[in-house]
Image: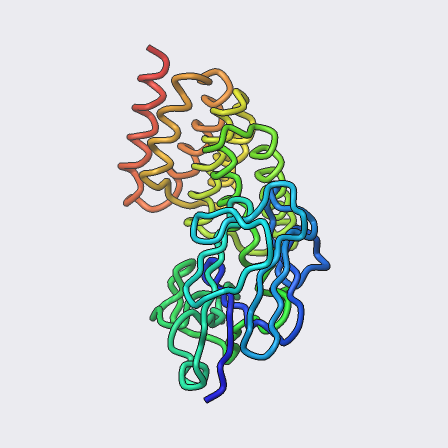
Amino acid sequence: MTTRYRLRFLLQEFDLPKGETLIGRSAECHVTIEDPLVSRQHARIMLEGDAVTFEDLGSRNGVRINGLPVKRPVQLRDGDRIRIGTQELVFCRVGQSAISNKTTGFLRYCAHCRLPYPQELAACPACGATEQTDEEETLSGQFGASSKHAWNVQLLLEVTERAVSLGRSEDALSMFERARAQVEERLSRGGAVFPTEISDLVVTASHVSELAGDPALLAWGLKLHVRVPSPISEAETHAIARALTRHRAALEGPVQEVVRSLSSLSSELQGEVAQLRALLEEARQ
């Protein structure tokens, strides 16, 4: 039985080819990680026969495998957890039968919104559609342009949140600005931005705004609800309430715009409208 090896990263799996696999921030790497703590060429994996060796390429912030710092080349074992920057990759040994069955970790593409999601889900988590394309990917090669593009905003927001948790204001601002630029570019092309994505953007924007002391990013996130009319999530409501206590003058206008936008939608959203109005009244007192 032929043995294959993979890296599991977020909801994606990367088949390790024979020879060298470079990991880093550079687009020239086989596995590109958008993270300010990752060096351009951070590390490499060598697959020779059945031996899989991991090596740190003199990166600035180093690498940890199973929580331990790595200073010299080490042999990888099934299930090893590789921490590079704020990201974690899992090394997997896969038998031929698992390869043929394609049971977990693979992606299918939603025929409606074109976003990838795990094969085992019955419906697209972004838009709820159940129709899929015939495409499936294990990402054999660089995280390809289509998959990387589809997941990039999600990845950037995750990196932003981790930068916030580390108190790295500049890194958090930089990563969120990149996420915002991608959303703006997608909207300019007439692409879709879904309610769950807007919710994540608003919540992360609130965290960055709190860390940086500047509500501008949160104001931008809130206005997405006006540009793409969509309901407010519970997580957003909590974030807005917290932000209004600190930046009422800057956020009152954007919140009022959201209230007007939601008021024109389904009557089912009137509870959310009332809640936002109550938050505004409370902040004014």
